[in-house]
Image (cartoon, rainbow, N blue to C red; front, side):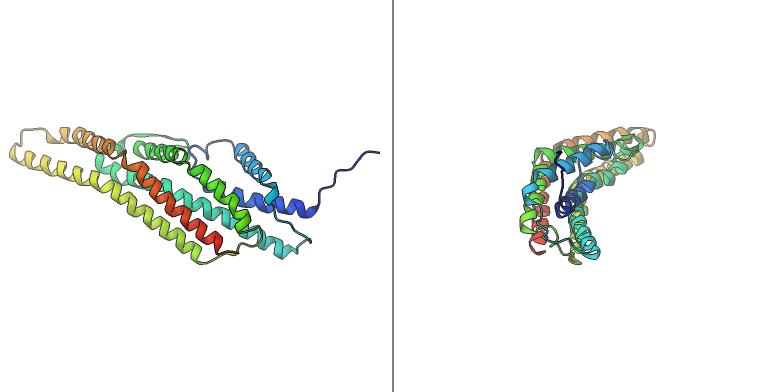
Length: 258
């Protein structure tokens, strides 16, 4: 006689709910080139992480009702999306800062192919995305986020997560902090470019025969590039500091939910 393989329905539900938590996180996780990569690879990675945590799957004794199962699924997806969105704000710090100074520095005229959006984008924004993706891996943030979500299966078991209205407020606060940090990164460069424009204007008034307009763009681009290169040592410190803030916010809401 051939043995029949039977998988309990409750086990499949535990697998599906855990997979929803990881899949929601991977939607917004700031991996460089993740959106341009094959969808099958991302799905396979999420399934692999879920299977690796099989011992932490929820133990469902009885088959829940449809409404209860839908509520659990929404909660798990919301938790994953919350973790992914909170982590995605880290990359936006550098992208917003690059966007703010690209016009003043004259780099807005140079565009290149963006692998994430499949469209042309400013060259400074592309470099900012690559720098943020590099810091995401070099600082170990990828492992921290995955381990954090894995521990949440114990601190906040699947099916016990409760949506809080303050979660939206926390994401808004993280977004506001990202805008502030991006402005702090861009303001030194913008201030220097303002001084260059001021000097060029004064020189143009003193000597009207000089072609100041033709010299201003190369000087501004060179000055912005030199100042940005001097600020490169600040980027890892800023990323580590803000990533600790993001991890703290995620841990706070995971602990409050059970």
